[in-house]
Image (cartoon, rainbow, N blue to C red; front, side, top):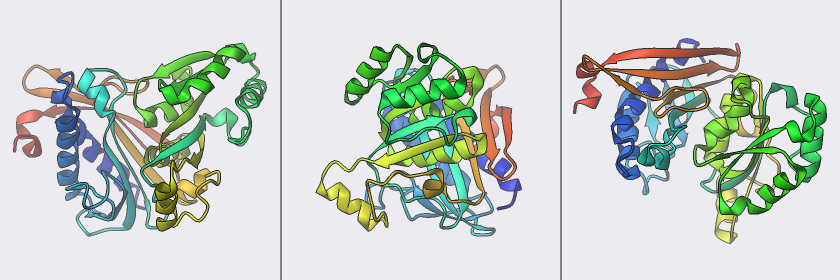
Length: 321
Protein backbone atom coordinates (compact mmCIF):
# COMPACT_ATOMS: atom_id res chain seq x y z
CA UNK A 1 0.00 0.00 0.00
CA UNK A 2 1.13 3.54 -0.64
CA UNK A 3 2.22 5.39 2.48
CA UNK A 4 0.25 8.47 1.45
CA UNK A 5 -2.91 6.51 2.26
CA UNK A 6 -2.16 6.89 5.95
CA UNK A 7 -2.81 10.62 5.82
CA UNK A 8 -5.68 10.21 3.38
CA UNK A 9 -7.79 7.89 5.51
CA UNK A 10 -7.51 10.06 8.60
CA UNK A 11 -9.56 12.65 6.70
CA UNK A 12 -12.33 10.05 6.60
CA UNK A 13 -12.35 9.46 10.35
CA UNK A 14 -12.16 13.20 10.98
CA UNK A 15 -15.29 13.79 8.92
CA UNK A 16 -17.20 11.00 10.64
CA UNK A 17 -16.22 12.36 14.07
CA UNK A 18 -17.26 15.89 13.16
CA UNK A 19 -20.61 14.64 11.86
CA UNK A 20 -21.45 12.63 14.98
CA UNK A 21 -20.15 15.06 17.62
CA UNK A 22 -23.25 17.33 17.57
CA UNK A 23 -25.25 14.34 18.86
CA UNK A 24 -23.17 14.02 22.02
CA UNK A 25 -25.35 13.84 25.12
CA UNK A 26 -28.63 13.97 23.19
CA UNK A 27 -29.68 10.40 23.98
CA UNK A 28 -30.00 9.42 20.32
CA UNK A 29 -27.42 6.80 19.36
CA UNK A 30 -29.20 5.93 16.10
CA UNK A 31 -28.91 9.41 14.61
CA UNK A 32 -25.38 9.78 15.97
CA UNK A 33 -24.32 6.58 14.20
CA UNK A 34 -26.23 7.51 11.06
CA UNK A 35 -24.50 10.88 10.83
CA UNK A 36 -21.05 9.31 11.23
CA UNK A 37 -21.81 6.60 8.67
CA UNK A 38 -23.14 8.98 6.01
CA UNK A 39 -20.17 11.35 6.40
CA UNK A 40 -17.63 8.53 6.31
CA UNK A 41 -19.19 6.96 3.21
CA UNK A 42 -19.29 10.27 1.35
CA UNK A 43 -15.70 11.11 2.26
CA UNK A 44 -14.48 7.77 0.94
CA UNK A 45 -15.20 8.92 -2.62
CA UNK A 46 -12.12 11.16 -2.44
CA UNK A 47 -9.73 8.39 -1.32
CA UNK A 48 -7.55 6.82 -4.02
CA UNK A 49 -8.29 3.15 -3.42
CA UNK A 50 -10.42 0.37 -4.83
CA UNK A 51 -11.76 -0.75 -1.50
CA UNK A 52 -14.13 -3.49 -0.45
CA UNK A 53 -15.80 -3.29 2.96
CA UNK A 54 -15.18 -6.53 4.86
CA UNK A 55 -16.20 -5.17 8.25
CA UNK A 56 -18.85 -2.49 8.28
CA UNK A 57 -22.36 -1.60 9.31
CA UNK A 58 -23.87 -5.01 8.49
CA UNK A 59 -25.11 -6.99 5.53
CA UNK A 60 -26.44 -5.26 2.41
CA UNK A 61 -30.04 -5.77 3.49
CA UNK A 62 -29.31 -4.42 6.99
CA UNK A 63 -27.31 -1.28 6.18
CA UNK A 64 -27.87 1.37 3.50
CA UNK A 65 -24.16 2.17 3.26
CA UNK A 66 -20.78 0.83 4.36
CA UNK A 67 -22.33 -2.62 4.20
CA UNK A 68 -20.18 -5.74 3.89
CA UNK A 69 -19.15 -6.16 0.27
CA UNK A 70 -19.71 -2.52 -0.71
CA UNK A 71 -17.06 -0.98 -2.94
CA UNK A 72 -15.65 2.29 -1.66
CA UNK A 73 -13.03 4.78 -2.76
CA UNK A 74 -12.37 6.59 -6.03
CA UNK A 75 -11.72 3.22 -7.78
CA UNK A 76 -8.24 4.45 -8.65
CA UNK A 77 -5.36 3.03 -6.67
CA UNK A 78 -4.58 -0.23 -4.86
CA UNK A 79 -7.16 -2.90 -4.09
CA UNK A 80 -7.69 -3.01 -0.35
CA UNK A 81 -9.85 -4.58 2.32
CA UNK A 82 -11.61 -1.98 4.44
CA UNK A 83 -12.77 -2.36 8.04
CA UNK A 84 -14.77 0.50 9.52
CA UNK A 85 -16.65 1.50 12.62
CA UNK A 86 -17.93 5.00 11.86
CA UNK A 87 -18.89 5.51 15.51
CA UNK A 88 -17.30 3.10 17.95
CA UNK A 89 -19.32 3.78 21.06
CA UNK A 90 -22.77 4.94 19.91
CA UNK A 91 -24.10 4.64 23.45
CA UNK A 92 -21.13 6.63 24.72
CA UNK A 93 -21.99 9.56 22.47
CA UNK A 94 -25.68 9.36 23.33
CA UNK A 95 -24.83 9.60 27.04
CA UNK A 96 -21.98 12.09 26.67
CA UNK A 97 -19.38 9.69 28.10
CA UNK A 98 -15.72 9.08 27.22
CA UNK A 99 -13.86 6.95 24.65
CA UNK A 100 -16.07 7.24 21.55
CA UNK A 101 -14.18 7.43 18.28
CA UNK A 102 -14.39 6.88 14.53
CA UNK A 103 -12.19 4.03 13.29
CA UNK A 104 -10.81 2.65 10.00
CA UNK A 105 -8.30 -0.04 9.09
CA UNK A 106 -7.17 -0.94 5.58
CA UNK A 107 -4.96 -3.76 4.31
CA UNK A 108 -4.09 -5.30 0.98
CA UNK A 109 -7.00 -7.25 -0.50
CA UNK A 110 -7.56 -10.65 1.10
CA UNK A 111 -5.83 -9.93 4.41
CA UNK A 112 -8.59 -8.83 6.79
CA UNK A 113 -10.73 -11.50 8.45
CA UNK A 114 -14.40 -11.36 7.49
CA UNK A 115 -15.42 -11.44 11.15
CA UNK A 116 -19.06 -12.36 11.76
CA UNK A 117 -21.16 -10.10 13.97
CA UNK A 118 -20.94 -12.07 17.20
CA UNK A 119 -18.96 -12.07 20.42
CA UNK A 120 -15.25 -12.80 20.51
CA UNK A 121 -13.26 -13.74 23.59
CA UNK A 122 -10.22 -11.44 23.73
CA UNK A 123 -6.88 -10.99 25.40
CA UNK A 124 -4.99 -7.84 24.42
CA UNK A 125 -1.56 -6.77 25.64
CA UNK A 126 1.16 -4.23 25.01
CA UNK A 127 4.63 -4.85 23.52
CA UNK A 128 6.19 -6.23 26.73
CA UNK A 129 3.76 -9.15 26.84
CA UNK A 130 3.68 -10.14 23.16
CA UNK A 131 4.03 -13.90 22.76
CA UNK A 132 4.07 -14.54 26.51
CA UNK A 133 0.39 -15.29 27.24
CA UNK A 134 -2.17 -17.80 25.99
CA UNK A 135 -5.89 -17.27 25.62
CA UNK A 136 -6.53 -20.87 26.69
CA UNK A 137 -4.89 -20.48 30.11
CA UNK A 138 -7.06 -19.98 33.20
CA UNK A 139 -7.26 -16.31 34.20
CA UNK A 140 -5.18 -16.89 37.35
CA UNK A 141 -2.37 -18.37 35.25
CA UNK A 142 -2.55 -15.53 32.74
CA UNK A 143 -2.25 -12.93 35.48
CA UNK A 144 0.67 -14.74 37.12
CA UNK A 145 2.54 -14.98 33.80
CA UNK A 146 1.86 -11.32 33.05
CA UNK A 147 3.11 -10.20 36.48
CA UNK A 148 6.30 -12.20 36.11
CA UNK A 149 6.98 -10.85 32.62
CA UNK A 150 6.39 -7.26 33.76
CA UNK A 151 8.39 -7.76 36.99
CA UNK A 152 5.36 -6.83 39.09
CA UNK A 153 3.33 -8.36 41.84
CA UNK A 154 -0.07 -9.61 40.68
CA UNK A 155 -1.67 -6.99 42.92
CA UNK A 156 0.12 -4.28 40.92
CA UNK A 157 -1.51 -5.26 37.63
CA UNK A 158 -4.33 -3.18 36.16
CA UNK A 159 -6.82 -5.04 33.99
CA UNK A 160 -9.43 -3.39 31.78
CA UNK A 161 -12.73 -5.09 31.04
CA UNK A 162 -16.14 -4.09 29.71
CA UNK A 163 -18.65 -3.63 32.52
CA UNK A 164 -21.09 -6.36 31.49
CA UNK A 165 -23.14 -9.01 33.31
CA UNK A 166 -21.57 -11.68 31.09
CA UNK A 167 -18.21 -10.89 32.69
CA UNK A 168 -19.37 -11.59 36.24
CA UNK A 169 -17.27 -14.76 36.58
CA UNK A 170 -14.11 -13.11 35.21
CA UNK A 171 -14.57 -10.10 37.47
CA UNK A 172 -14.99 -12.39 40.47
CA UNK A 173 -11.66 -14.04 39.64
CA UNK A 174 -9.94 -10.68 39.16
CA UNK A 175 -11.22 -9.57 42.56
CA UNK A 176 -10.07 -12.83 44.13
CA UNK A 177 -6.46 -12.48 42.99
CA UNK A 178 -6.39 -8.81 43.90
CA UNK A 179 -5.64 -6.98 40.66
CA UNK A 180 -6.86 -3.46 39.99
CA UNK A 181 -9.83 -3.35 37.61
CA UNK A 182 -10.66 -0.49 35.29
CA UNK A 183 -14.16 -0.88 33.95
CA UNK A 184 -15.11 0.28 30.48
CA UNK A 185 -18.72 1.23 29.77
CA UNK A 186 -18.33 0.87 25.98
CA UNK A 187 -15.62 1.29 23.37
CA UNK A 188 -14.20 -2.17 22.75
CA UNK A 189 -11.54 -1.08 20.22
CA UNK A 190 -10.18 1.66 22.49
CA UNK A 191 -10.13 -0.79 25.40
CA UNK A 192 -8.08 -3.37 23.51
CA UNK A 193 -5.64 -0.67 22.36
CA UNK A 194 -5.11 0.73 25.86
CA UNK A 195 -2.40 -1.74 27.02
CA UNK A 196 -0.15 -0.54 24.18
CA UNK A 197 -0.13 3.02 25.55
CA UNK A 198 2.04 3.27 28.71
CA UNK A 199 0.30 6.46 29.76
CA UNK A 200 -3.03 4.60 29.97
CA UNK A 201 -1.70 2.47 32.83
CA UNK A 202 -3.42 -0.71 31.59
CA UNK A 203 -1.56 -4.04 31.57
CA UNK A 204 -4.17 -6.33 30.00
CA UNK A 205 -7.54 -6.13 28.32
CA UNK A 206 -9.71 -9.21 28.86
CA UNK A 207 -13.27 -10.42 28.34
CA UNK A 208 -15.52 -10.62 25.33
CA UNK A 209 -16.68 -8.02 22.84
CA UNK A 210 -17.65 -7.75 19.20
CA UNK A 211 -15.68 -9.85 16.73
CA UNK A 212 -15.49 -7.06 14.11
CA UNK A 213 -14.05 -4.76 16.77
CA UNK A 214 -11.46 -7.44 17.49
CA UNK A 215 -10.17 -7.21 13.93
CA UNK A 216 -9.98 -3.42 14.12
CA UNK A 217 -8.10 -3.69 17.41
CA UNK A 218 -5.69 -6.21 15.85
CA UNK A 219 -4.87 -3.72 13.09
CA UNK A 220 -4.14 -1.01 15.66
CA UNK A 221 -2.07 -3.28 17.89
CA UNK A 222 0.06 -4.49 14.98
CA UNK A 223 1.03 -0.87 14.37
CA UNK A 224 1.64 -0.32 18.09
CA UNK A 225 3.69 -3.48 18.60
CA UNK A 226 1.07 -5.09 20.84
CA UNK A 227 -0.97 -8.24 20.44
CA UNK A 228 -4.52 -9.50 20.64
CA UNK A 229 -5.67 -13.11 20.73
CA UNK A 230 -9.29 -13.93 20.03
CA UNK A 231 -11.76 -16.79 19.84
CA UNK A 232 -15.21 -16.55 18.32
CA UNK A 233 -18.16 -17.37 20.56
CA UNK A 234 -21.05 -18.57 18.36
CA UNK A 235 -24.10 -18.75 20.61
CA UNK A 236 -26.16 -21.22 18.58
CA UNK A 237 -26.23 -23.39 15.46
CA UNK A 238 -27.13 -20.44 13.25
CA UNK A 239 -24.10 -18.43 14.37
CA UNK A 240 -21.88 -21.49 13.97
CA UNK A 241 -23.16 -21.95 10.43
CA UNK A 242 -22.58 -18.25 9.79
CA UNK A 243 -18.90 -18.70 10.64
CA UNK A 244 -18.60 -21.55 8.15
CA UNK A 245 -20.34 -19.50 5.46
CA UNK A 246 -17.78 -16.71 5.97
CA UNK A 247 -14.89 -19.10 5.43
CA UNK A 248 -13.98 -19.82 9.06
CA UNK A 249 -13.44 -23.59 9.08
CA UNK A 250 -12.98 -23.91 12.85
CA UNK A 251 -15.07 -21.27 14.65
CA UNK A 252 -13.58 -22.22 18.04
CA UNK A 253 -9.89 -21.95 17.15
CA UNK A 254 -7.75 -19.32 18.84
CA UNK A 255 -7.24 -16.52 16.33
CA UNK A 256 -3.81 -14.92 16.15
CA UNK A 257 -2.97 -11.50 14.77
CA UNK A 258 -2.07 -13.10 11.44
CA UNK A 259 -5.44 -14.86 11.34
CA UNK A 260 -7.23 -11.55 11.81
CA UNK A 261 -5.19 -9.10 9.71
CA UNK A 262 -2.75 -11.16 7.66
CA UNK A 263 1.02 -10.83 7.57
CA UNK A 264 1.33 -7.80 5.30
CA UNK A 265 1.04 -4.07 5.87
CA UNK A 266 -1.97 -2.50 7.55
CA UNK A 267 -2.94 1.13 8.16
CA UNK A 268 -5.12 2.22 11.06
CA UNK A 269 -6.70 5.59 11.80
CA UNK A 270 -9.02 6.85 14.51
CA UNK A 271 -10.43 10.24 15.46
CA UNK A 272 -11.84 10.94 18.90
CA UNK A 273 -15.48 11.96 19.16
CA UNK A 274 -15.49 12.26 22.96
CA UNK A 275 -12.34 12.45 25.13
CA UNK A 276 -10.67 9.11 25.77
CA UNK A 277 -7.60 7.30 27.07
CA UNK A 278 -5.32 8.53 24.29
CA UNK A 279 -7.38 10.83 22.04
CA UNK A 280 -9.17 14.08 22.75
CA UNK A 281 -12.74 14.53 21.57
CA UNK A 282 -14.19 17.01 19.11
CA UNK A 283 -14.02 20.48 20.65
CA UNK A 284 -15.97 23.44 19.30
CA UNK A 285 -14.11 26.77 19.12
CA UNK A 286 -15.07 30.36 18.34
CA UNK A 287 -15.27 31.54 14.73
CA UNK A 288 -17.09 28.41 13.49
CA UNK A 289 -14.13 26.12 14.07
CA UNK A 290 -13.78 22.68 15.59
CA UNK A 291 -10.71 20.86 16.85
CA UNK A 292 -10.13 17.13 16.30
CA UNK A 293 -7.52 14.74 17.66
CA UNK A 294 -6.57 11.70 15.59
CA UNK A 295 -4.08 8.87 15.50
CA UNK A 296 -2.87 7.30 12.27
CA UNK A 297 -0.44 4.39 12.15
CA UNK A 298 1.19 2.06 9.66
CA UNK A 299 2.40 -1.42 10.59
CA UNK A 300 5.21 -1.56 8.02
CA UNK A 301 7.05 1.42 9.50
CA UNK A 302 5.53 1.37 13.02
CA UNK A 303 5.18 5.14 12.67
CA UNK A 304 2.54 6.57 14.98
CA UNK A 305 1.24 10.05 14.25
CA UNK A 306 -1.02 12.09 16.50
CA UNK A 307 -2.77 14.79 14.49
CA UNK A 308 -4.45 17.87 15.93
CA UNK A 309 -6.54 19.59 13.30
CA UNK A 310 -8.58 22.79 13.25
CA UNK A 311 -11.56 22.69 10.89
CA UNK A 312 -13.47 25.69 9.54
CA UNK A 313 -16.95 24.22 9.61
CA UNK A 314 -18.69 26.43 6.99
CA UNK A 315 -16.26 25.02 4.41
CA UNK A 316 -17.13 21.40 5.20
CA UNK A 317 -19.66 20.73 2.46
CA UNK A 318 -20.44 17.22 3.69
CA UNK A 319 -21.48 18.57 7.09
CA UNK A 320 -23.66 21.29 5.66
CA UNK A 321 -25.85 19.17 3.37
